[in-house]
Image (cartoon, rainbow, N blue to C red; front, top):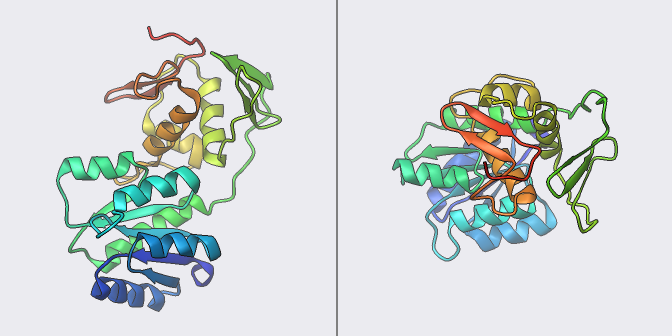
Length: 239
């Protein structure tokens, strides 16, 4: 599987690009190195990678801005590499949609392990959810039809959902007003238990909120329960 997996390394330091690239090639990956954000954007047009290893601090367009672009327009997983290791820096990177965050200097074996963990998750075949009793359900201004895999607003316009967003919304509408832990959500969406570094559920919840909430900063449907997880309300109310 590795021989067909394309990884892009985006870092303005040539030594890091070369060392990481050589290490990953030795483990069977196809690697493209990019010296800046523009180089990666050009690569996306001709040969999109399966995963991006991204430096945070770069001249010109920085890694945080580039990650936001990737998360808005693609489903490509991102691992940040950075010498910025303060908690707020890590949290910001994860909130922008990064799948993992590794501090410089780092052990290449740890980077490889994290790459493999992320690729196992995203390359797992998506299984269709069990047929629901009710194919169409309404919440707030939205009508969600699982059979057609459609989320339609009050204006009649369909909002596209990624495979992970679709499965996550299915879990939520099946368990309204019930607090679900991150472990439970990850198990039902991805079919496995969460590990310490896996923040993919938080990222997926954030992306889904941006699509269904009028104001994602004050969600009315997907509520956060600090220390507990998330719950879903079919009613469009703030209480």
